[in-house]
Image (tube, rainbow, N blue to C red; front, side, top):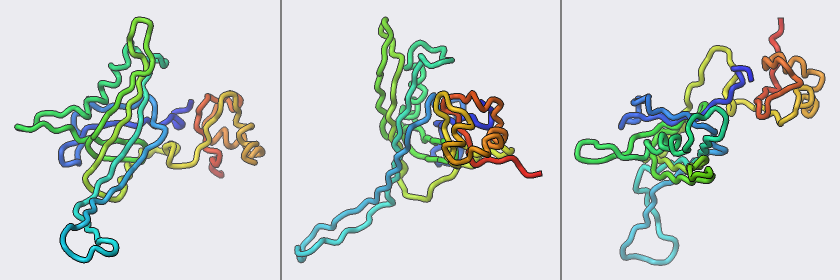
Length: 231
């Protein structure tokens, strides 16, 4: 797969207590498989006042806090996937568990602040919960595959943070522009025909730097709107 079409991988990074600078970069985690989805939840802190008065009608409610933003996602790890040297999946998942483990801060223990990055998506918060499911074992009882359900929160509601993507002429990160994912056994010409662009399949292949348009990698991302620059 050409470098410009490599899939952007999500990352977990530790940040300081002020939620500004990244620290302990040796603890950064690049996920093995990207999440299928991200769920962002906003919640205001609302309270219904108590006290004497007319009980008829709907009681007024008061906003009593800054609100909360939560992020939920699921990650998968599998040591049977190609290129993995570990023989126990927990050697991979323990790098994620670091972000929920409280650390000594003076006389108190606090979990580290975490930054989740995926392309242009950025979320800074604290990891509230982490659930790990060991789902596949070897004959000798070693866990080989696991899923991790993560919940993060920040004690405020604010505008979305957009992480700046790298420059240099590469194609935009998948997710920021509509891409077509190539099924197994597909060709550029076949994909172009299915979208009514059959007459332009050669230009699409060239603009995506595809050397062999008749042999696409399963899951390869292709910009079907790409075209070579006019001379």
